[in-house]
Length: 118
Length: 161
Image 1 (cartoon, each protein chain N blue to C red):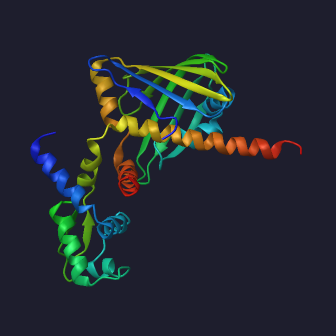
Image 2 (image 1 turned 90 degrees about the vertical axis):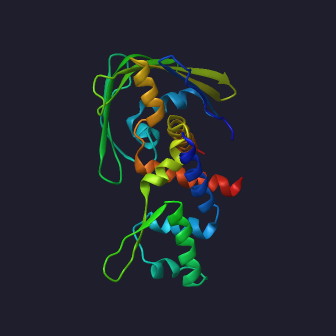
């Protein structure tokens, strides 16, 4: 990883250090949305939401397209991927897998208990 | 975190080693490796649908399954079970359809720790250093699904840290 990657990573993590911006990202992971749509669930002004989007844009986490009247905000999956790519992914998959296995064993143990004659 | 995964990806060797303890008896953990209905519930990255063509976890048996992401992209995996000893040991091959012929050999030792606990010891051998490194980097099938999941975890972790 070179230094420019590092500074982009810094920006991305700083951008995500804010709960409102995380909620915006979570919303965009379900599909593109306009500023109005993004502002709806928030108790903050549209201007504030616009500012948040600018921060996310500077971190390259989101992009905005210009179609006629709407300017929907899109997630930038490549940037999000880069956010986690520096983590040992194999480990994460394995960890997740074994946690799932724990859950399976847990639920099996429960069914076995219920099966036993009381 | 309890029962943390100990994983080592040694520099310059085509191996991956891991150890993981479970708060369950060895027979339960073995059964979760053997019963296709249980396998479906934990094997592979979360968020992917698993369709098992066949999964015959016994000496001389074979397996083949598909993982499908929400984007509809499917990844195929297959191999043979060279040796399977009940509650004790298994050796299998592992091949990802996206990289045909790059077959790894997976050794799994199920160790009874007593007190209803056990340990799983894994040793994966790859046909080349390149294949091992590629595997360690890609995390089997990576993809955006997991990217989002990991991001979620990362953010959740950041929130609770």
